[in-house]
Image 1 (cartoon, rainbow, N blue to C red):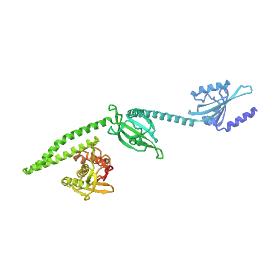
Image 2 (cartoon, rainbow, N blue to C red):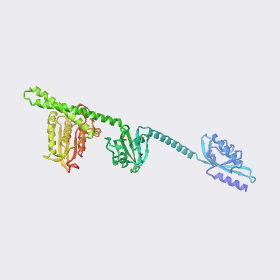
Image 3 (cartoon, helix red, strand yellow):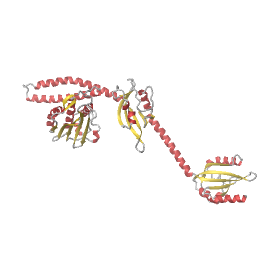
Length: 494
């Protein structure tokens, strides 16, 4: 039976795809198979002249020795461990080692039978994964630290509007907006106010609610908190997050503290309003006395010429003051549009005729395509401001020999006002900011042309206050067309 067992062992070793060794209780290798030789880089004679201790990686020797001792002492019949071997070429091999001790009929140790599976590649892959996980964890800690350290409130919400993550800065804002606590869902109303700082923000207008619906936006301004001493003004931006298939996954929102900026704007608007009111009284007096002087028949021709210059500049100054007053009224939410039945065509015609001297002086052909009459519910004074600003804008930026065309028509239930010019045109990067308050394009022609950057802002504000919209189509070097659509009868006018 012993001979049969030895024969079976030799047969198994010869054909086994895993490394096999037979070692004495002292560790001398008595037999090795081809798989073990190939694995460790030695030939059979070299390995059988060595002990398993000789090829064990030094740092793993103590663990293996302790297990061998426990097995010889009868504390265990076998053991298994992952250990490192040193190949003949000096490279390290990771092996999954299984060891069993054979004993004779009297229980005396005969030899150890070892099986080794090369797991070097798996071990290296595991170490790389471990290193990658450690790197990811480190980066995650870094990102989390930055997330909490930035001076901008950051919020991540899922598709249902549930708050998934909020940084420390936004938690401060939430304590002001929701002193009674927040439920962790988008759209919760609280001490959140519109940009005027007074009007409570409706649920559908809250940035978090809009973002849940997939809306993306920038610079939505609001106030949080009701205590004047601690409340803050915020500028909110939102971007959607989406799954690989394009479906909405949630949104990321950023809340920037713009309290100082908003308070500075309020101070500026108060100053502008105060100065404009102070200037209007003496200007009215100047213009009145100029009108009286121009009616005198005893004035020399050169004096009349000089008075005309004074009159033009005083009128220009009055227009600038009116623009500043308008801006102050709009910022103070006191601007009102008073609609009355009026002939829109007559209003536009008067504005065009008033601008004709300016067109003649600039050498620009000014024409109008207007219906004989077009009745609408409108604010004639505000509509006149719109036409004055658009026509003046066209004339200022059109060279001599060019054209400015004004067209008015009714389309369905809206009046459509178009002012086209063959002027310098507007660069695409300037179009998006063209209607912003005080904005002027950074070109040499614009810099050399007098203006405050308020005219087009006033146009948009009035048109929108009338329930309409305004658009510009332009090409550099070929001209621009401003189009305003305004309801003929606004809701509530009856």
